Length: 320
Image (cartoon, rainbow, N blue to C red; front, side):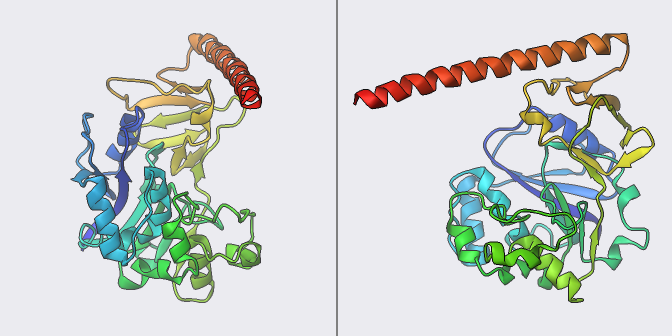
């Protein structure tokens, strides 16, 4: 078996502009991670040796899913693939055959020094590893490559509903109708929607001694106040606090968060709630303000546009 983790990331639609930032974090984790990037798109960026592109058309992916899990998938959009993450071990069983561990994740993030955050008693002691507590985390989770783990998804009581529903139900974390609460095992909230989601299954199996679960809150998903996250040759720090990875899922939705189009991503850069910076110097204050004002203008424009469109459409509907 290969002493690495195979992170499975199917990607369809368009290659995002932030892919080079993801690749930079991957570059400094060559000893531990291989990313299996499954796509029908051309990747033009220079990639590290542990980025493995696997060509697969959208149609062939659908066929692969049906063959692997024995049921027709209702894949209308690539985002629906999130519901299939717990099934990747089965769907891509051939691709991960030589790996001891497999996993899944997002690319709107940058890895830090992942080895620093793996358990001190060794990854081989665990069956499932996730970097959020009380939640199987979609952006980055690791699972042992054996038949038991690859087939755990079948323990849900809503498999047909999950596969056949064209909308993403967030099965890979906690289904959309179930609120996630700190310190509460999700299988204790089953009465809210009657669904055994992935977090419920993993936590229940772990609490009953059927698998060993490692769960620690080692990631960062929101930069608060005027804090600055420093990326320095594979390490992510705010002051003395170090993180396994930064997931900019919330920040990227903001109009003032700037994602750069760097031709070459440097080994050292900075991340503020207003975006990425190559340097923090006296110009930082002015650039930060510019982005904040630009974001406010864009937000105001969108509000005016949407309000105008709503009123026009409303009047048109009344006149019919």
